[in-house]
Amino acid sequence: MPPKNTTENASRRKGPQFNPPRPVKAPTQASTTTKRAPAAAPSRTAGAAKKSKASAAQPVATIISSSEDEQEDVQEADDSDDLMEDAPIRDNTRPATNLAPIAPPIPAPLLARLLYENFEDPNTQIQKGAMNLVGKYMEIFVREAFARAKNERQSSVKGGGISDGFLQVEDLEKLAPQLVLDF
Amino acid sequence: MASNDTAAAEREERLKSALWYSIGQYIDDQSLDSDLNATPQFIGALTELVYTQIANTARDLETFSRHAGRSAVGVDDVMLLARRNDALEIMLRGELERLREGDDVGAGSGGAAGKKRGRPSGGGKAKGKGKVGS
Image (cartoon, rainbow over all chains, first blue to last red):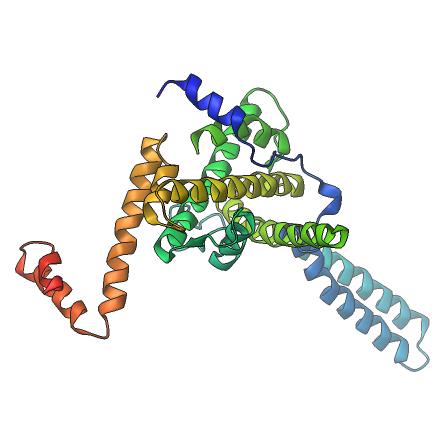
């Protein structure tokens, strides 16, 4: 099939357009990375608070002992800082090859709901085998998007871009047209 | 009418939120493996992309099944999605065969069909399709 034909099809298609992202409207459960660090922090601060309360509850303390308490508090803070620095260090020994056992990116019930919402005719049904296959199709789509974004990031780092290891929207912008043409 | 529209829009937003969540989980999981990280904006944009792709896929599947004179989307319709990408078609075909085998084993685990399926592989003859039919 010549490519001209495919582009014609694409332009004639009346499907929904790709909307730019609206990061402001991020749902509360947006991502786990942003939450991980704060989740660990409160327990430590609570511990520190408990500690200070305990020292406050002590009967009239001499100047020396109170200074010792302060010293202790400072050490406590140092400890928690160390722990915070340790936290983000990840175990890099995890094998990157075990792709098979991961759960699919889109749970099957959610995908089924999304498909049914987008059928024009409410009477349209979908067979179970076809459903599973669409699940695989979308899994490949998401995996491919991620792999290409990773690739895009690496090549832009080589080109002298910022290299903070964060996948950016511009990576997705570069890969999206070819990705959509391939699927 | 207006309330109907807003209800539909709200439903779409909620579905997108659910999609955002599960894709975010997946991408975070994957990026840990490759020592990367993804900005929330990246995940949001990817969610929009995937949502659009699902919507287009749904329309395509519906159209394919209508064209074949069916009202239920079948496996063949899904295979048509991969008609322009040979590698994708091979992957989907492999998955389809895997699913079929799993289906046969799963359906026959209680009855005799599962045993019949197990025997031909030991005998090393045909796939056993004919025997299952008997």
